[in-house]
Amino acid sequence: MNIALSTSVIQRGKTGVAQYVLALTRALMPYTDVVKFHILALAQDIPLFEFARGRMNIVPVDECWRPAVRNIWWHQQVLPRWLDEKMIDVLHVPSYRRMVRAAHCNRVSTIHDLAPFHVKKKYDLARMIYGRVIVKHLARRQDGLISVSTSTARDVERYFGVPVQKQNVILNGIDHARFNLGDRAAACAMAAQRWQLNEPFFLYVSRLEHPAKNHTRLIEAFDKFKESTGSPWQLALAGSDWHGAEHIHAAARNARHANDVRFLGFVEDGVLPDLYRAASTMIYPSLFEGFGLPPIEAMACGCPVISSTRGSLSEVVGTAARVIDPESVEDMVQAMQEFATHREKRDALIKAGLENARRFNWDENAKRVMDVYEKPFTGTRSWGG
Image (cartoon, rainbow, N blue to C red; front, side):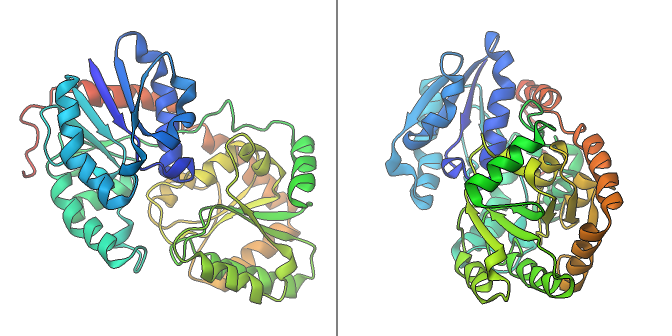
C-alpha cells in the first residue's frame, strides 16, 4: 500500500496541528515494513522529519507553495497529478484547511476543530468564509474523516452534515517517553537559568492568538490575583505570536504587575517537557479547543492543571483539572488563589492528572489510523457528494 501524508499546514512545527502530524508520523514508523509512506513536506519543514528518513520517503515541496492561497491551489490542482504518477492508494490530509476535492485515490482527512463556528473573529473574513462554507463541501467529498474528539465529531455532524457514526473518532496521543515526571529539580534550574522563572509560576502554553486563546482575560486575572495575595507567583506565556498578538502584548505592558508576566516565545520540543515539570501550575483558559494537547502534556509531567472546558476540553481533562469559566475573570482569580494557598488541592490534581494522561497513547491510536487507511472506501460516502 502507498500512503501519502500532506504536511504543509504544520507552520514550521509551531502549532498544535504540527504536533499531531509529527506524533502521528512517529507512531506510524512500525508499519513501514509493510506500507510505503510518502511524507510531502515544504522544503523548510523537512528537517522536522529527519527522524523518518530512511524509513519513509520524504518528498520536498517547493517553498513557493507555502502561502495559503497558493497552497490550496497546490492541493487541488498539482497534488492530484502527483498522486496519479506515484500510484498512491490513500492520501491523508491532517487538517480540514487543505482537504482535496477530487483525486483517484482514497482521501482521508483529520478535522481538529470547527473553531470558525464557535469563536467570532478568530480569523480574517476570507478564512472564516473558507472554514464555514467551502470546507463543508470538501468534507462531504472525503472517503474517510478522522475527528480528534467526540466534541469535534458532533460539530462535524451539526455543521457539515456528516453523521458521527460515519466518522472515525480517534483521540490524540502524547509521547510518554518525552512527557513524564522526569527530574523536576533539574527542570526548575533550567527554567530559572533560561527564562529567570523561579517557583512558583503559572504556565500557559499556547500560540499568542487573540481573542480565541483568551490571554487578555488571563493577564487581567493574574493582575487581580497579585493584588489580592501579594504573592511572588509569576505568569509565563509560552508560544509564538499569532493573529492579534499585539493585543496580548499591550495587555501585559499595561498590567500593574507587568514585570511578573514573562513571554517565552516558541518553546522547542526538546525543552517543553522540562518547562511543564518546572511550572507550579498550568492554566489553560482557551475559549475553544478541538482537543487541547498542552493540559495532557502538563499532567503527564506532574504539573497540576486549571482548565477551561470549552469545546473538547471537558472530555480531555475530565475530573483531573480544576475547571473554570474562561469568560469569568473572577473565576480565574479564585482558582489561582486556591492553588497558591492549598497545596493539598494541587497534590490531588497532580495524582489525578497522571492517571488521566495515561488515556492518551499514540501507539494504540496509530493502529486505529491504519485501520482507517485500510478500509474499503468505495461507496461509503452516503452523506453527500
